[in-house]
Length: 487
Ligand code: ADP
Image (cartoon, rainbow, N blue to C red; front, side, top):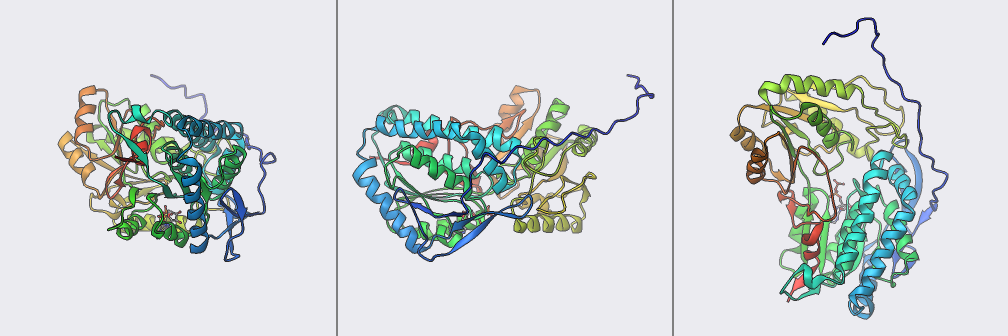
């Protein structure tokens, strides 16, 4: 096709389209939500939650101690014994449904706070995090009075008090993933959000309060790692659900060894996105971008390792580089922004360290020219080519917008390379052949395998990993099974 040489190449600039913040209400100081009340931390200590996009302080958040955790577990136990476990299941369902409806009503506020507190783009918070979080409550509300259908011919009972510890990449969604099935199965909860992103969990506490959930059924204890450890080690907790780093997951697994506490771990990942030569290349390029860049790489199942069949590698890489040039990095509140802020200074330092490691290992780095705000934590989208399987950037989780690219010739080769990882969380396969998709799905060692798409989630669909990505599933009936015992 001839191109018209008379038309100059145009560089598009979008006018800013900022999401407003005047409608949100944040308190200056947040206490702990225990036993249906807002209580001061016993230590009197608070820490700051900042906006990683501009480093401004958003609010102060209570630093929960072992003593506070103990009070929260006692409140959860009392609510379990006296109210929640004996309430008819259909009544429990109504509360869970009500939480979902109230979240929907306050969806815009929740999305904006998620963006302010975590740095993710408003597009992601608005279109993915918040609707999915609501849908988890809706979905599990439906199961609450149908447990005998969820587990036919088996008698199930709730576990008791569930301790739940969540990370900073999907704060509200992770809270929903954990709280909704726990409540539906008849358990009560003590949840600790991550220290950099407590605010939407605290907003959820307000919603829970407004929903009239009986006191102590859900308790939110904010704090750092030691607060989480106090939940893990509390003797009256029956179940721990943890999402976070593999290192902390290992500490928790050791701490629970020999106890009767049930455990599910959703840990790190280094997921492979595999492009065959018969794939729809333009769609695949979008899938790659969606898999690792739109979310700053802050997804445990991010498609951070790209494997491209050799005969289309040049084409795919060229298209990918062109696409990267069009991505907007900047203010996450701008609806045009594709890549928002990195969640914290520490995380940016980790990513920067890996960029250096990649270069030292001999890989070739590509970053498009882009302007990055002077204040806040940002990282441009980054590609590494000339990557060896043994390189640290291809083996270790970076948790940033950094993609390693390797090529392959045969199916056996790519399966071997994709599975050569300590992790096994997710994978993507791009091909037009259905039989090849099934073949790959059988042989790839990953909990979730997407075909001709990436990062698609649904409350009905279980999610979880193999190997160092953890064990247990969240979502779907499997996610419910994690909160019951079979008697
Ligand atoms: P990330 O690297 O994604 O921040 P972490 O595993 O450090 O992941 O944190 C995930 C969650 O685990 C956070 O809420 C954090 O406060 C909590 N946490 C950190 N250390 C511990 C620990 N030793 N025991 C329990 N929870 C912890």
